[in-house]
Length: 64
Image 1 (cartoon, rainbow, N blue to C red):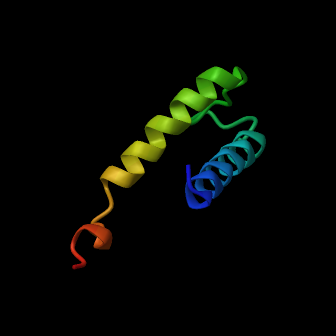
Image 2: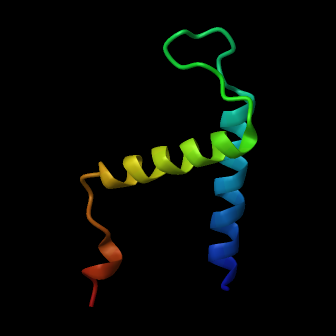
């Protein structure tokens, strides 16, 4: 693994922990997820949806 991949993983985990700790406590539209494994599962789904909905194509595949 390169250092860029390791750094990306650290950033992703840090972002997930930050979102877990900053969940709204009494929001009826989006209830707090207490179980960490359930939160991690939902976080990964939301991350995939966010990446899928991006309009910008990856520039790495088009460079020569």
